Length: 125
Image 1 (cartoon, one colour):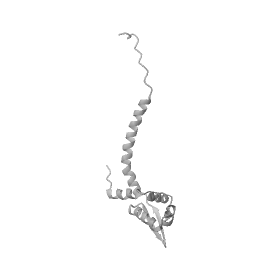
Image 2 (cartoon, helix red, strand yellow; image 1 turned 45 degrees about the vertical axis):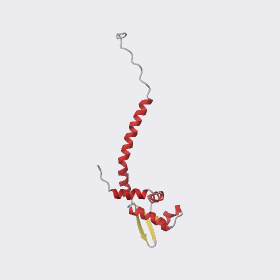
Image 3 (cartoon, one colour; image 1 turned 180 degrees about the horizontal axis):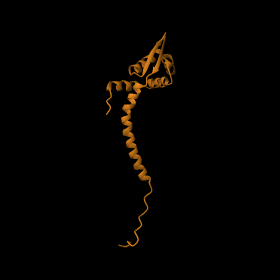
Image 4 (cartoon, one colour; image 1 turned 90 degrees about the horizontal axis):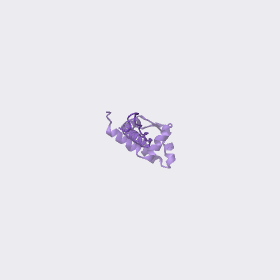
């Protein structure tokens, strides 16, 4: 079984627990964005956006480069792979359960088998 660093996963899932941060990650998946570009869809201040970005940075999912006076953010998907691997254990759990349910439902929906005909010469025995 794979060992997972609990603190790292806690930090990742905390960062993903906020809709604004998830939306920011979605933007960054399309390419680099400035802090202002990340803040714009939410009508939030640069300071508020920066706080969200800091949480994502602490989780290792975002890198911030300072270019002159502009802060440019980019996505680092590696921590998301750790979260996906952890979730994969539960994906297998639910896939197995849903496959079993599907087999049961298909068996219930299947037409009943035709009645067996008696073998010739065995009638009335």
